[in-house]
Length: 479
Image 1 (cartoon, rainbow, N blue to C red):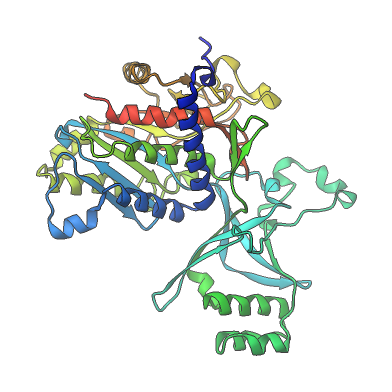
Image 2 (cartoon, rainbow, N blue to C red):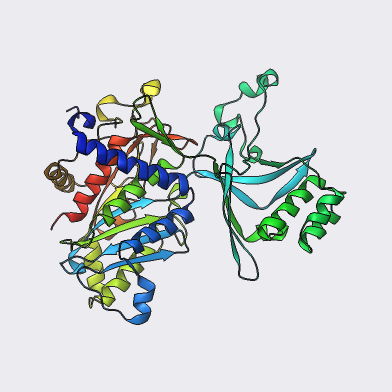
């Protein structure tokens, strides 16, 4: 049952649509490298498409009915878009769920130090990474610094061509014989992923040119840690940030630079954070493509945080954010009752929109060829994920898989099915098992990726296009 390569079916009009989508997608992942940036971009796009703030509607007591479009946000890092359908919400929803966090390096709360004439930032890696992949490449710093006076300062350094970049250093091969004898997991230790940010000491003239107050105070420390002091003077001058402000900061170290076309034929995309922003972007695009049409069932797009560390926290899928948002909307729609909410959740169906491992011939031994996802063959459905004996998996029912097949076939969407590698080779999971606790039908679906969790991941434009088409078909599907 080998699936046909999707590229073979496209006419010129389809290819034009595919390329336009790819251009927009490359812009999206290049400009939004953190969950906060993705959430803000999703809200801005939703408002341009006529979505209203749920918080504003609650405050005003605005009634909700078929055609209403609403957005909600949790801590600036998770977003839910709801397009109310013709049927009562209690009859169930069609839901797309993706995550907008990606593996990275997080700056610690007490990070800045000087050693041997270098200033560095101490980090704690986030999610599953291969530490050695993060050395010797240009890095950018994105995030926010919250000050005690209530001001929240946005930081974005390294992605503008005029900006400096940062890096984690690596050991030269001439002195690396012992390093090369280590296991891959030990070649670079987690505590060694410190980011190089400066080498110039603060001089008296620099202190004089710095802002009064914090800049001067840092200049007084130049005799002890002059390079650190100069970094602090620069941060004070540009952002008004003092060293103690790192205590209430969320700063993420991510690869610097834009996503790019890959290959002579420009058929692929290479870029940071495609797990899972390729599915988040296509889910968002599908939700907004409904326009002013009233879907048969309420259409929902859920973009959540913290999947890479277990979907925990107030902005993760395991929080009450999703359930509370639906409860609030149902109250505005005149369906306010705990039982109706339970019925709505149980009767819903969801695509857990997360990436799948693309078959890589360089590492063929960890894949089972008949049940692998291949770049260019379309949207991937994983009936189950998990590890070993499907541990941690949501195993979709045969009936639901058949329904999803019918929806894709009716819409002419290229799709394939896969497992996450050979049995006992490893494994992984998604958010699927969390909404499944309500009794709703859930299946994993997404785009196959090469080099998953590396600083630069690879996807096929054809798969991105088919995911966007498949997600819209799912949202429009009737009972």
